[in-house]
Image 1 (spheres, rainbow, N blue to C red):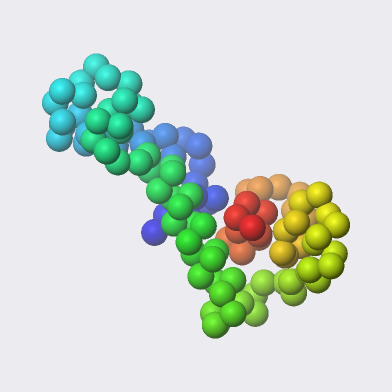
Image 2 (image 1 turned 30 degrees about the horizontal axis):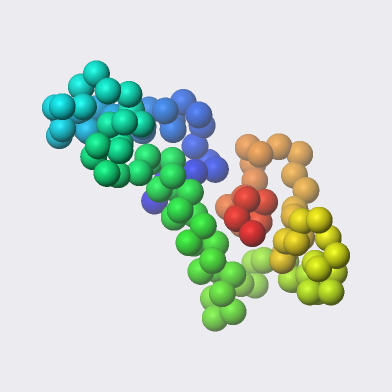
Amino acid sequence: MVWHHSLSKTQCESLEAIQRRAIRITYPVTVGMSYIFALSYAQIPSLHSRREDTNKRFFRSISHPSSYILSLLPPQRDSTITSILRSAAIYPRPATRTKRFTSPVQYFLLNYQ
């Protein structure tokens, strides 16, 4: 699995270019179509959206009470506090100086609550 937050923009674009080429080889009618229309014709999502969906499912699985990784997450906020906040995130959002060196757990907390 390729974690989305650890890929550079260039790497993401390279992966999408490979998928774009594979679609054009598999479906010759898509030659000349934009990538979005080719994805629609092939009835498949973009690699970016598939990585996002996989990351969301993984975060839901580690935040499940029976998960052995749950101990890596910070303690959940009290529901009385989250009910009065603008952003009702269950976990407090970690503060990081840059996005480059965030751990996967920090990335999930920032993006998938």
